[in-house]
Amino acid sequence: MITYDVRYLSENSYSAEVKEAIFDFLVLPADTTYQRLKEYRTENSLKENIFEYRNLFGFKILRIRTSKIFRHFSFLMESKVDVIQQNPFDFKPLPLHKELEILNSDRFKIENFLFLRKTKYTYVSEKNKEKFLWYKRDRSIFEFLVELNSYVHNLIDYCTISTDVHTVADQVFEIEKGVCQDYAHIFISIARENGIPARYVSGYLNQGKGYIGDAFMHAWVEALIPGVGWKGFDPTNNLLVEHNYIKVAHGEDYNDCAPIKGVIKTSGISSTHYSVKVMQEQ
Image 1 (cartoon, helix red, strand yellow):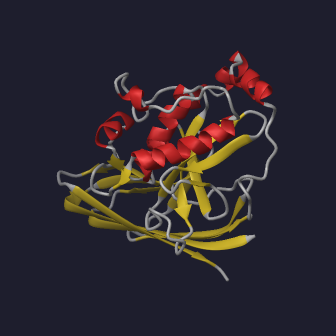
Image 2: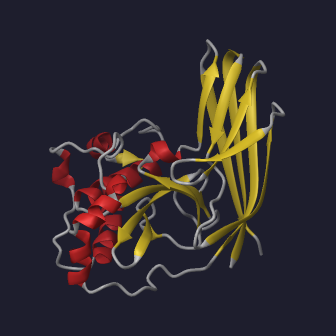
Image 3: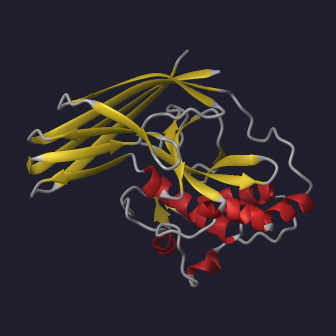
């Protein structure tokens, strides 16, 4: 068991007064099979109460609503989470013919419809599908996904100024540059087109390991392997997910996992900056 201390700080500034606002934060480490949230605390510069609710996928949202007038707002979340050490290769797959039988069944497709369909972020044009990696059904699904992880990693150059939170997979195929969000959307697009359910995951990385993107909230993918379950893949770092990853949420794409959403009443423009600190306890 590994214990992490996770700190998330968001700073929001506005060029004109904000007269009313609602903020939703999806930044709290989740309780899953491999991790447990031990404790957490939050604070905000407006001294408002924080309300909790769960989204469509069951992950906890921290909501702040205010009628106070302000031009600067900060939010802090500090938590402690236990993560079970795991070997992502330690599992026994089904025989290939059985995997494919389940993968091709109508029941499997219906049960996993949400993670097989195209979304605004994962749609790719026919022209760019020429760059897809295709599963030829001649080896296990896991083996294909490992290759896909490496394929996407090598397809895109990591660049923090080439895309933003509105960039979609089709655009990333054109420029072949992006950040973790873009790597995840490309992986998801290709996996779903091959009939393999895949979902977008947000969370944190163990800092100090030299992983790409560890200074920010990170994004990776979980793909569903029949008879095994959901397995995590990080195409940004070309790694399989294990105990150095701390999950916050999953969804169809980035829109379901955005760390902050809000509705504000103001005539000005806004800027948001955030920082992440993850420390492994000794």
